[in-house]
Amino acid sequence: MSCAEVEVARRFRNAGWRAGWLATCGRRNDTWRELIYAVKAPLTSVLPVPVPLLPARIAGLLVRHGNAGYPDVVAWQSERHPVFVELKGPDDKGIAQASWVAAAVSAGTIALEDFLLVRWTFR
Image 1 (cartoon, rainbow, N blue to C red):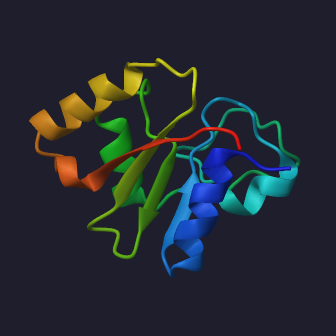
Image 2: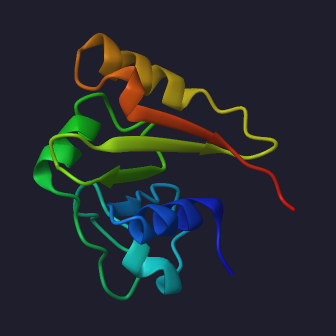
């Protein structure tokens, strides 16, 4: 069993990047633990062992613009230039990420080229 976020993180890792799913939605599965990063230490965890934290520089980029709208996956070869990936399924109309990206780009925190939007469907 898998999900789109896990598969995207795996593909980045297979290409030599460090990458992980931020999994802020709570759908964490212990079998995916190696592919999940936390932005900050959770007060509680649904997993028996907490997931690792993102490097502080990348976590700082994320939290600077609020908790709502974090991208799903973050990948980096250098902590100075991470790539943020948002995945949208067939029925996903969420707009929280648009606000987060707009705030981050407007503040100069990230460039629009650092953000990737992936639309996916079941096959």
